[in-house]
Image (tube, rainbow, N blue to C red; front, side, top):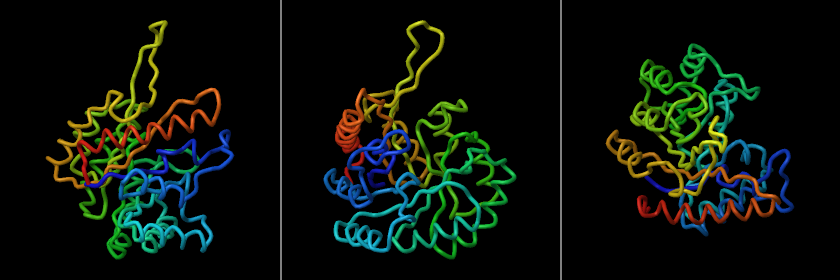
Length: 270
């Protein structure tokens, strides 16, 4: 297991509709963050896709990652075969041996389990040929259903990107998700959080925290993953709440990244 950062550790720094920083973090800039933090894995998601870069910029990413010994992982959304083939080609070019995908489509629709199984069945030979693993991220699909579809296909090229918070939206607790999906886990998204009761006592809020400052039981999760035989890389993601000014939010995000990596280092030295 190696420690790394993902593009979702720097959502505010990269920017998105409604939050446009003056100097957005780019693909090479994310590698520079990794080098500064001393981590050796960077996962590029759809919010900073390598697939839209110019040839010159992509070559710069490849050269910098090789020079610094930083492993690249690719993240995408959707399971349509034509799209996955494009992502596999990109993964091969940058040396990624893992492709993470969120099953939900771009329009937000969650596919049915028969649809997911059909999509996976259609691409499993492509994954084997490319020697690249596909890791589905848990979210709006129950963990047990994800586990069952993977069991039905029985392919070493298919697995899970285990996220510590996403499944609260279903809702499923982190411990439940880890217990069900640990044996399938090929990638681990480290994201800490707190759940707090509203002041009026009628409801709760979920908010991100720097790793080690929330309710995620990181030592227990690591224990479960290792017991299940998983060697998944641990990729930091963050949910810093918006501050009054965007620049203040970006500063908080960057401070959390530093703090989180320092905390995680005591469990993942490499």
